Amino acid sequence: MTLYTHQASNIRKTWLLIGIFLAIIVGLGYFLAWNYQMPEILYIAVAIAVIQGGTSYWFSDKVALSMSGAKPATREEFFDLWNMTENLAITAGLPMPRLYIISDPVPNAFATGRNAKHAAIAVTTGLLERLDRTELEGVIAHEMSHIGNRDILVMSVVVVLVGIITLVVDLFMRMTLWGGGRRNSDDRGSNAIVMAIGLIAIILSPIVAMIIQFSISRRREFLADASGALLTRYPEGLASALEKISQYSGEMKKANNAMAHMYIANPFGKNSKKGFGLTKLFMTHPPVEERIARLRNSL
Image (cartoon, rainbow, N blue to C red; front, side):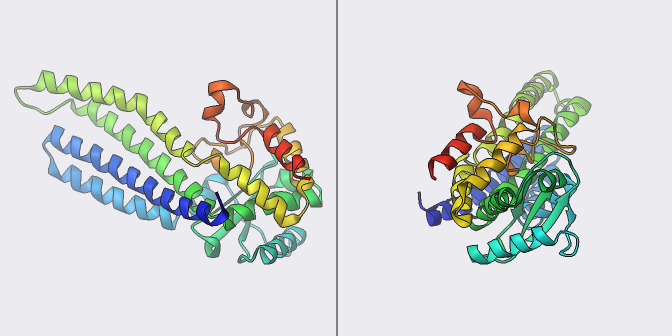
């Protein structure tokens, strides 16, 4: 897969994700409207789907930055980081992204935004403290590659979609418990159906959330690693950075499952990074050892 086909694939994937999201919300709204004999529920569900679908596209970056606790970085306070990012943006032929700082001792970073003109990179204070210049440059180049490869829109949209789907399923279950089923002669049978569907929804909702997250192919991390190394022309910088990041055992203060896939490394810490057999299929990141090996083999 070339860079350009990867970009086109990410655009198609974004619209597919939004389409799945709309279908789930409208489907639940239709069922609730039928169950409670209240057509207005369906209209509300459609309105929520449209509004949240638009929100996930236009404001997903703001949601991600807010969830992570990121604050804008000024050129005066973070002069070296700012200049480094500016130089890499020029080299990559991309606009200068907005820079944000997350006050957290865990070394990590992520990029977000709907396109290159509206992109942002957030790094933790721990990353700035623990990495030397070449290592930090490798990380910023990796995140810049996510922007250039158009990964950021897909990654950011998923944050909103996973959260909204979970909330809607929770609302559905609360309505089920409070209201039972349709109030007619078939109450008992209807209640049984509603409860059965509710239980299935409880079981499937985290799986649906994971499927949405894992539809963001882990190949994007390998591609961003390779593109970042090409941008700096020094693969060892990123390899060394990943090594240091993976050795830190702490968990980020605002780590959450919805955003885990966005970071350069798992925000839940060292104990969550390994995966073998089937477990490897449910990781948000490729094994860091494999990423480092690929970078060093390219030297």
